[in-house]
Amino acid sequence: MSSTRAYRDAIDHLNSLQSNAAVLDAVRASGGRSSEFAIPEMLEYLERIGYKPNDLNALNVIHITGTKGKGSTSAFVNSILQHTKPSWKVGLYTSPHLVAVRERIRVNGIPISEEDFTRYFYEVWDKLVENDHRRLPQTSLMPGYFRFLTLLAFHAFLKMKVDVTILEVGVGGTYDSTNIVPKPVVTGITALGIDHVSVLGKTLKEIAWQKGGIFKEGTPAISVAQPSEGMEIIEQRAKELQASSFKVVKPSDILLKVPLGLAGKHQIQNAAIAVELARTFLQGCGAFENTNTDELPQTFAEGLKATKWPGRCQVVSDPVERNLTWYLDGAHTLESLDCCMEWFLTPGVGVTSKDEVSLPTKRILVFNCTSGRSGQTFLEVINDKIATWTSQNTQSLTFFDQVIFCTNVTYADGHFKGDLTTKAISDKELVQLTTQNQLATAWSSILPDYLPSNVHVLPSIEHAINHIKRINDSSVVVKILVAGSLHLVGGVVEVAGLSKVAL
Image (cartoon, rainbow, N blue to C red; front, top):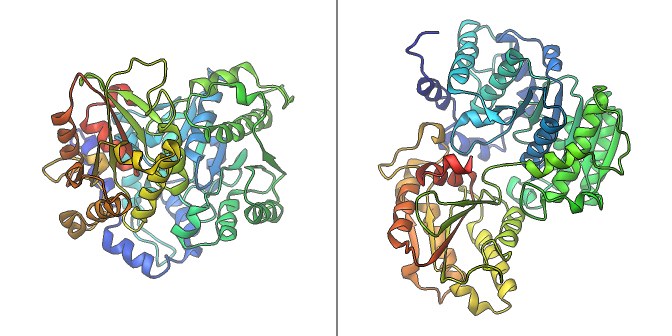
């Protein structure tokens, strides 16, 4: 590989594969590109880089989908397997990333190095450029951003000879780029979020049908308990696609006693399906003799306790600023925001507990959401949880001393960190701060007596961090909740210098 082909160059090439705001708007307006070509196109890309579908079976895949909790579940499975089989190479492919795109492709929990990423990137890129013959006329020369990263992950894991691959679906299931592995070892579906029905414009049955599309003939299928209409479709899909078995998992009493490494009550359900996925996988590989599902093996418990997943209900003490603590949660749905606020309102987290030294406390909310999502409804969820906790609506006026609505742009000069670049936001929206002004208006309509001078609309994450540093007072405990977007959380980790302690 030429020395001039650096990691930064690979990231620039990768970013060129992103769809811009205009393209995404056109896709939404048309109801989405026809899905019937999604898998054939992905298979064509796979062939162009030198692989056949059956080659992917060597990855020993645990395939996981769902509308919420699939990332956390993948992290739990990863940690369980690392603790149970410490000699194995455990591959983990997830999305999105917080700070560096390499986070999406991990081995034994560690993102692949910049050197490995760059080498594997260009091996895939060059093959796609060289092998430009396309059987399907609608297939573009280069795949889109997520498709390319999926191909890159397959290639990297095969080259590194991983013993197992935990493969998180990007979107949906049936037509997702990851759904080209002919024979995964086990498949699983985490919770189907009700609010995705309105956001995606699909019924719960349609969403369930999509998720169930990862089931494969002769492969065990597992799901958490779902709403009845969704559960019915998932069960039908398991039969239709001839899964070898179908099991619905519920948290056991034993699991309730394990101090999970990920915070929040909602993680118990994710841990439950993770345990079943890991157990089924190990048994399927003949690597695990314990068939007693009433017991939780010691290594499983250790794995659950040790699980880390940055940006999800995560507490990070600022390494420089005294008495300043960051509470990071990329919650971006109504249900995940509800869980986020329940966590933040827990004594000892965002609320002072009886055992803590009682210093004056300031709370700041840093928030953003994707264009197209209902910011008003999101902010109502936040304030409804606060109002319920205080039991008096007037007290919610003083819960957050200040609120900051900023874009996901990383730096004050208008540029993104390379790995955090996004073309999904129109230049016009960024310049006019459309979403952020809408959020500020919504906040004031929900809390009309809230001081306008304490509501800030800022053009970048760096602007937000600088504002917080200006008002920080070492004699006061400052608690900052960052929520609404994983891209926002990642930018805060980068700009606030939290990477070494947060990732």
